Length: 417
Image 1 (cartoon, rainbow, N blue to C red):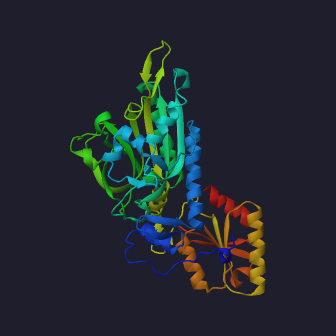
Image 2: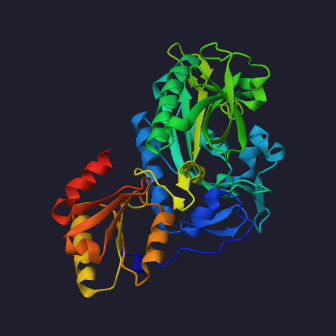
Image 3: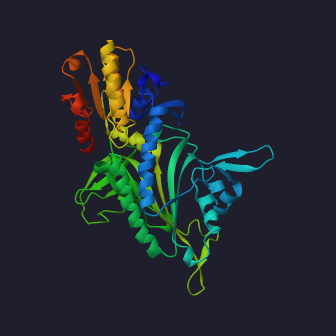
């Protein structure tokens, strides 16, 4: 894509209320636009990042047997009354139409997915089932803060598993754990993300969060110094030793919750009377698990972990483009050479953002650092004399001059690192 075609532009000034790094950089870089507190427009560059994240998640969910659907965001009051959450959930958006019908804007989809599953599950032969979606959620966050880490409207992947018994759930739960580790590693958060024990409430001793260590974190976790498992602050007083390895030494860290997995058991299948008939003809309740990831929150966390004082430093896997091709100077021969390089790279399958704007070198290079694409290619009078391109990784100060006829091989090696 040519940068001159983007309808958005980088922003120099943003509202003083934007305290979080993720919001500041995403708004300055024109990845998102803030409509109101907790509500954002995804702009073209931001949409490309979200699509990359979504595809990574989709691949990992499909790998553990997930089947993708999309459920409605508009949900009937009756379903929420069945579980008791119409009156007990304090961040539920409620609306009434002109005929007096009361509905909710879905903050989650247990009240929808269970009645849906009931239409197709009746026998042990129908189990297990794994269903997931990417869907917009709505939660009444009265004090929306932390940029896109905590919003009123946000995109989420929610995954629901249905099982004949707890043993089958337990086995699948371990597969889901690994899939989540794969997702966070592929998004560039693997080394800083820890499986974290949290209180599971009345129907399960523990739930599990995935927490990424960063100073911008809203949560406090305690990381086992022996095995890396973590415990969140709410249950630390009653958990003096690591639930995994039994060690007693923990390190306190600030962290952002980037995902959670939960053994629901019969919490939602029970109220909707979701049952199946086993091999002996005995009717039994369906056992459930749930697995969630907020895509915007994940994008914001990547930025909180990967940035410097100049801007974003995208991991290759989620960057909107792999390469940022920048021309310095307006001589016709420079523009011609840059066009040839851009066309060649694009034809060979590289994702290239080509800064062909008539701007100063300072503006272009500052914008390049702000946008944070993994590899910058500069064509200037100096490089043209040597029939070369200046190549620099966003996360390094090292600059290399690479001959144009060797550029694609050089870039391929960088991408595979």
